[in-house]
Length: 167
Image 1 (cartoon, helix red, strand yellow):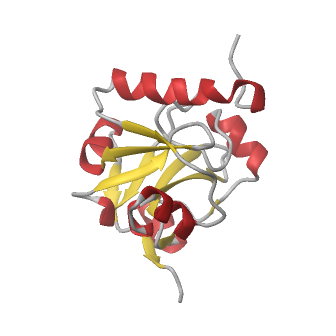
Image 2: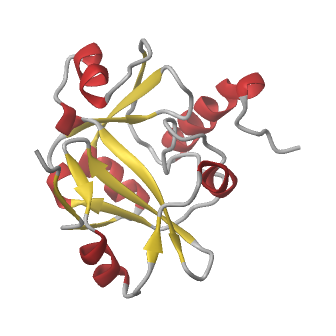
């Protein structure tokens, strides 16, 4: 039986995250944190900058497949750059229920680690050389990991796929 990422089995997502990180030899630190109403508030709770929180975005191809885009919190995905890199003319963010079906994770907890399907990973080059925070598969938890070790373990393509957030 495959566990679903719902309120009754929320810890299962964190367990999948930790098991996958361990299988890849990744050193991750998972911390429990208070709920936050914004990225800035989450960064303050964690004692880091918004740029150090990396969003794991699930992106849908028009052919129905998916990919992960890892984007720093102070930046936004650049659709033209990502489309050019992937070699397609259409990509989109799916609705929450589709992202859940594609990864086994609810929005706000999504991570490539422990995803129920190993989709390709594209990471923005600005995360290189840094210790980052990301979703840990369960609401109320964040994971800290070395970005270079993460991208290597995931076989991620590291490239310029983001733009600064508009002010």
